[in-house]
Image 1: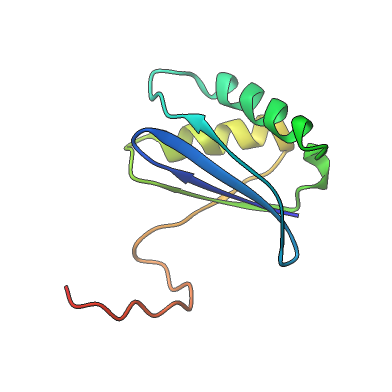
Image 2: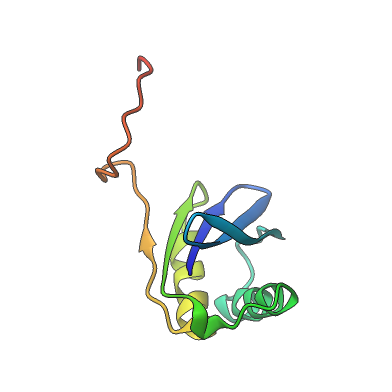
Length: 102
C-alpha cells in the first residue's frame, strides 16, 4: 500500500492506495505549531478507522506548500509506520508533463 500526503495551508489530505484502488482517504487540520508526535497519533487513528495497519504501508510521498510541515510529517510517518517518505519537490522528474505556460 502507498500513502500519499498533500499538505495545504488549511488541511492535510491523504490517500492510501492499494494498487490502483483508493483504499482510504481523509483530512487532518494543518497546524505548524503541532509536534510530529501529534500527527503520528492522528495518522495512526485515521488509518485504524479505515482498518489499515501501519505495517501494511510500503511507501509514502509527501508534498507541502507550508514551510517546515513536510519535515514534520516525515517524522510523523517514521514514528507511526516506520516509513521514510519521499518529499515531492518542484525539481523532481515524476514523468508528468505539465503543459501550461509559465
